[in-house]
Length: 317
Image (cartoon, rainbow, N blue to C red; front, side):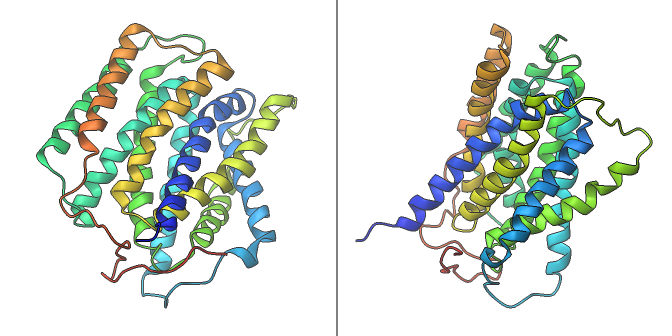
């Protein structure tokens, strides 16, 4: 029996994506302290779109015929993320720490699993539902136990916005899973960047938008890192991995984001957790662990596409 290289490549792609996303919290924290949050996101989308415009021939071809309604599915995917997701997260980083925001992302795998059970018919066991409640309790405990400080002036508001961002991220992942059977992951990533540019472009004309009077080195570097490395690398790798695995299994890799986020927050920003926050975070991870078991209908072969056929296509070149 040969080695399933596709599965190994998919796993490495998902790990790489979560590492980049975990580091984005610290980068976003640095960027929004110097620049307007919406301008940061717009710059991130523009940078990503410019690179994709240059690399257009490497998007990969459409894997199957266009299906009626796909244009609306793609628009909904991009509206959820980067649109509404980044809006919530950018403002969340003004009010909470990178470490706490990263911990909130631990809820995402459970939210995706619930949505996949309802929309994609991927079953959840009773233990998984219990884990969902446990993780939700941990998030609430983490939020209410946080006290305002220099890095988190309003943690309740910030963590609430980050949790709302996870709702939109769930919508993105479910809609993405319905599209990866027919379209190249890189094509879908490019669409996110292009549509994101259109979504955030009006921010240039909002009367409340604050333009920077000075250009500090590290905030500028953070914006370029977010736009060129995280946007392209993170979404490209995740979409690549998602195209060859179940939605709930791919979402389970999101569990690594809090780890990377806390490490980066500690290493780059000097953030730390109190003992109560550590206990609350442990409760979140316990809930995620209980919810991360294999579903009752776990597939052992190629990922099933929306139409029920197997996705046996190769990675885009």
